Length: 400
Ligand code: CTP
Image (tube, rainbow, N blue to C red):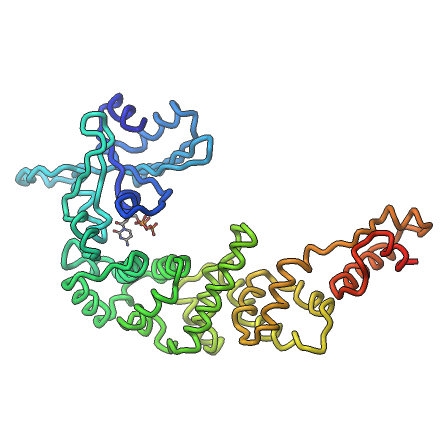
């Protein structure tokens, strides 16, 4: 459809970047990026009108996002033809705007495009050998200054290499090492580094990425005092298992799994050090709060969960904490039974409800009041401790 619109409006449209890369690799990717040779905001507005969709435009960057009625989104960007030509300058060698757009990107595997116009629909455009590099399983930068221009690409290179099990190209690896040696991270805004770290922690297996960060001394250049030892690696592994368990059981999208890994990286550092790191990375307030809770409360909670306590007492203790704190504590402990108690809380205790209701209590002649809450809570605790049966009549007998 986009191709038909493009023909109608007389522009060229291409699907570019990660989507094409993942299409060739046979991986799912729902981030559709389209480059328009022309004004993408005007184009997106027209597409949205025709498709009854919503459009958000960013005029300054000439980009737009169209959100279709079913929730599907497409991002549009303009491949800009050069506007700032010095008066009297020699005419530039004519280069397709698309090529110029793709030339600014990080790695060859991200520079593939597919044409969407009817004429040549589906044509793969590969200016920089991206297809060859996907076949060779190599991460390659486009030009020697790539890491200097944007050092966050160092993090991206290692993230993609891990995700696809690709290797760094020889030249790329050499330049990456030089960039790390020259401490180029110091020149980058903290929040951009944090954004890439977050992407790493959201990967399927951050442990493997951080292993690479440590190997290339990227980790120590961002966090000089953090030691990537067996203890941290084991913790990363347990976090991964807990997250897999949690995702299988719940589909809560709001849980900040990334912060569990970040917490694991930071744990053991002094609070002063942690604050410095978080300041340097301009970590947003919301993230800081969750991280602080994780780091401050998980160990306390684990101390309090002990064998003398009944399940209902553990319930009362544990229910006061954020889910991220519980997941972190469940990962942090090396005692299997503690982990099981916490996960049992998440999986069943917190949903436990007595069969008896307020109406039932009225029916047996009790006067409504705060006592109802107390009785119902007591029933819940007894249920969690398996001291009363699930059956309603028997629970009522117990109340009486
Ligand atoms: N890009 C870049 N330099 C950066 C960040 C991004 O050149 N520091 C380019 C990449 O070529 C990428 C595009 O911008 O294809 C979009 O970036 P992003 O959405 O982060 O990348 P994806 O490839 O879609 O990665 P992911 O699969 O992780 O979403």
